Image 1 (tube, rainbow, N blue to C red):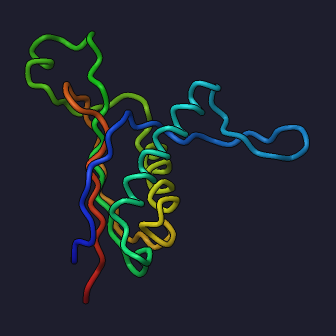
Image 2 (cartoon, one colour):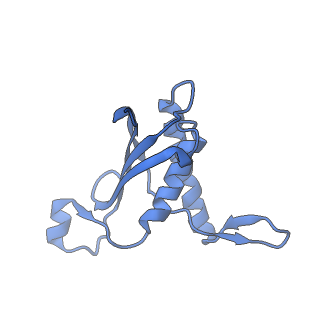
Length: 143
């Protein structure tokens, strides 16, 4: 695997949910107005960083992506977990919806041609004390 880009995106990862058909036939995100705003902010943050690290042409071909999501740790976590500072997140948001918004941000930012080019995906999500966002590595398969 040949690493093409490795970078961090700061912010609070937000899911991209299902779409709802509105009168007139247009589609909107199915979440609340607040949820849509958070999604838009996260996807925009990913696109901005992707734009900054992108080469002249978007990456194409067989791509792999590794994402480590860092979400805020709730204050309700026991002290022994908070002391560690990082813990696997096994609650909402759903990891597949976080992936969707993040990969679309990579496409929007011109880093990759299309998320359909991704043949391998390695993803994890954690609750953290400290900076939130994601660590992203994009690679290309080389025979």
